[in-house]
Image (tube, rainbow over all chains, first blue to last red; front, top):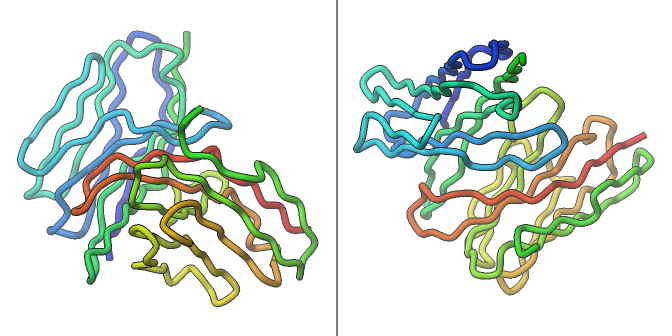
Length: 115
Length: 115
């Protein structure tokens, strides 16, 4: 099965600085890498994802990079704002027989943006 | 709110009792997932349905756990003879897809406390 490692577990940055969260995965067949944001007491929500046919994807202040050779992908948040404070989860897919598919999540990074 | 709906939001039970949770996915979604999340951890996969077929069950899912999705619509997760270790947030998610790599929409979860 898939094994996803996420670092760091906590991250504090000053408002306006950048934040980077890194994940590694084990299954070389994985081809889809989403990032979810979970605010305190709320449900996880997808913020950005990347497929294995591209190396980078950007959406305003957030970007994700993928290195398939090294089996790692990263989330980059620029010009951080207090509302970026949340727990961020990376995920990678695990495939098994009969068309089954499920996401394996990292343990999360608690990001705190200090005003 | 036409998103994923879960009931109840909170459940407190005594050890040894049975509990049942319900998930109503987004109506056109063919895939439904159950995840479990404990404090400070990422969601852990429990089981997955494509339409009414249960295609995969995690090794985490002991024989005390059973899930159904009759007619490919709502799903129920039942835990029999609850144990204190079952205390967690139980998240349901749904998606539309066939090959994987699609966005998961999470519900708000059911917080289970076993006393």
